[in-house]
Image 1: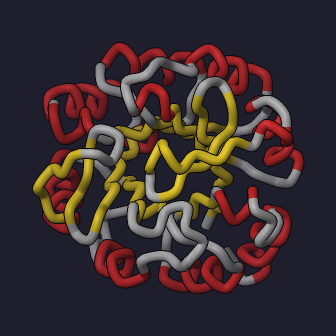
Image 2: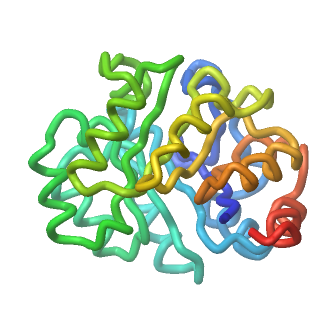
Image 3: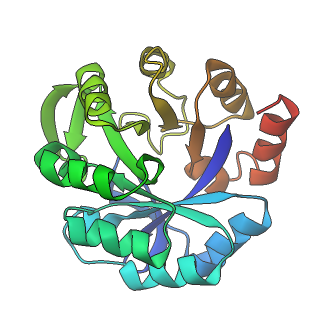
Length: 243
């Protein structure tokens, strides 16, 4: 199991939201530029860094130049999501060296593009984001309901050839409470799915439990930025337990 630190971008700065609400943004400019923050996580042992372009997700702009600089400067893998709503944008990110692209709205809106990406690239490069509020999957920057149950969504995408999913509890994201273990356990019953868990992680004990449940990876954001635990400690506890 991999511990993946998050670097969310808004207005060219590192930020964390609460429940995906832009009005509840907290900027971490004191830590330096996005490149500096990504390098900090790399130096602490991250093998992959999770980037979300919030401006692109919300239709307010793009941080692509910053993302490209990070990918080409640092010797670490990146998975990138937020506002990838065309084949061309997905292709651009893969071409600059992004390891995995995370698709949300587009995966639900345009099945043909998703299939084309799966045909053109290794399925390991394609992650579908299942951002859920209760059981409903939300799209367009977590603002609109897809009206699709998360279990139905994951089985439908598996039928198309998707194997890796980022499962995020919107209710818990950025709250430093606890993950939605119930939904995650249900998703992990689907043997074909590799589940990357996100949302609500606030203790090292949560990492231990998620590892024991069999998640493929864990995205950690606010817990790291608010010093609930260090990335080194998180990686150590996973490796110590045989992750």
